Image 1: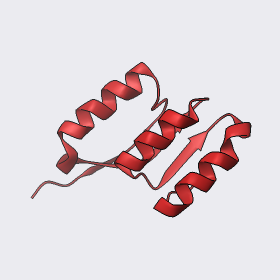
Image 2: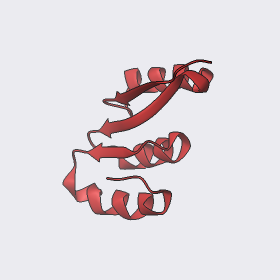
Image 3: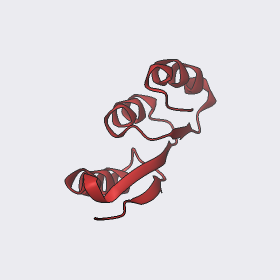
Image 4: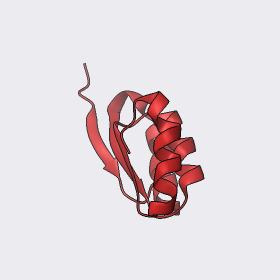
Amino acid sequence: MTIKKTITIFGATGSIGESTLKLISQHRSKFNIYGMTANNNSKKLLEIAKQFKPKKVVILNYKKYKELKSELSKYNIEV
């Protein structure tokens, strides 16, 4: 039995974050995503949060916070 590693991905919507998520998607049985962050790209953060279902997400742009919070509330993801 493999113990999953719990991780948080900073800059999940950027190129390194995308590469990390691609790798994780190929090894879902080994990783649990606790959190992910983004600077400004709320649309992309919403998309990947729905896919990977972390416990928490953070967006730096406060103007996009309320929209993101509203959208993710139905997925039980804390913003």
